[in-house]
Length: 399
Image (cartoon, rainbow, N blue to C red):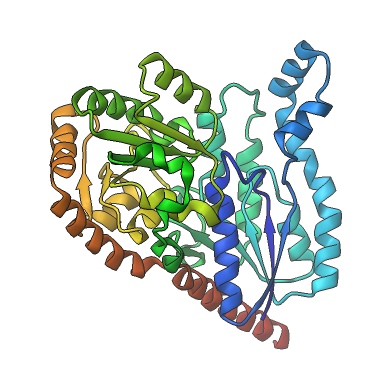
């Protein structure tokens, strides 16, 4: 089977690092099933250093253009994409197309429809809702994303979502239920069995400490404010505890300022962006893994960090919301905690800090659970959908 995958992730080091990992690991697993899959990443931005060298000199004009021109700039990219997408489909002649949904993009799904190629729309987040909710600093045209999303859903042969919570969102669009398939994120299990921590000099700073760790893009909805709260309470109480923070993003500067203001630099290692291939020794250095998502958001995520923590055998502290509760509840891999109740979460943190035996037992259970979520299972579900779509497509042509 030959598949083309259109991807519009715009970076791979900061806010889209999890999305980029998903793209790479899914396509690798799909190829291992014996298929050919060609990935076209059409929206990758240059590194910041390169962007800074070419920025406009007029700061005020740049600020205004960024605020009011964002929608026009991003939506107009469809005209650039369509040429490359057309050429790709003409050249590849795929049996099926997979499109990672972007709220601004409909070109690929329309080009695929023109060529009469079955399409799987990979909808990993409610794009229209997410932009309206979290990008309020920008001017957005009324109904733009909602209209583009309806068009994409209308022409999709099938839709994959990463959590059950996304089904409720899609039902509001009157989408045929038979088109929706839940396919959670996954993990490359063997990748996280590497524990060569001693080879990484940077991690030596945390030697001798019980380490609480976090990995993820530093956005508000990843619970960075809860992370600050945990750091402040735990480091005030325990001198033998350290924190390891992996990732970059919008709140990276806030993190640096928080650590400096509270004089935590001796107990906190901020690693920044760490390439996927280098992650295992960093996560292995953690004794307790944190997923401190806030409870005041619509939780539709399938958190990649949860699966990576599990594969690395780390006890997890996370709130009982969405897919996190579905995966962790009753599995003896850590504690589901209420971040609004300091007595609750601090008591459970105390239990894990004080008991190496408990951490080890939770970690063993975590590794067993991770085997259920390998990328091979994610890819196999997509493979099955592709085969059904191709069969239906061929049948309709014969008729």
